[in-house]
Amino acid sequence: MIGLVLFVICVIVTMTFICVNLRNVVDISLVFWNFSDVPIYIPVFAAFSFGVILTIVVVLFSKRKPKAKAKIEKKNKKDKNPPPEVENSL
Image (cartoon, rainbow, N blue to C red; front, side):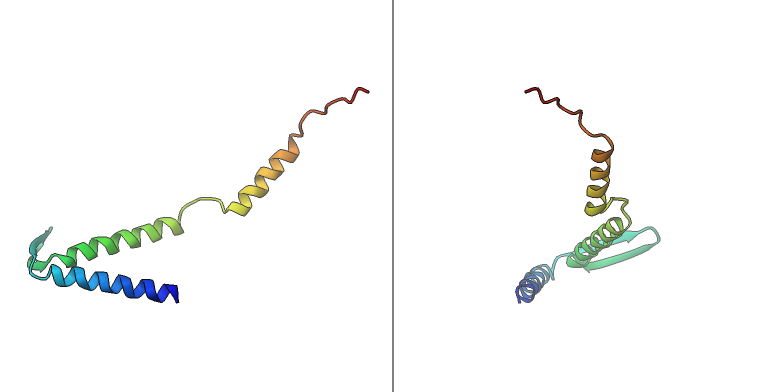
């Protein structure tokens, strides 16, 4: 339910941003292509989408160890090097 509410809020904010910026236009020049009078919200959302996709790719292919595996390795290291024993003198 909370996800649906957050989604609706995001849609409302997005639509407001688009409506406010409909008259703001820019010219975009990519190496061999020129686009004129493009509404500003299109390159903004394109850049945002590119960032989201790039982040997903980096997270999926990162070489981080899962936390559980790291804990097991840490425990194994600890067991291999036991602390020196303390003598009991009574």
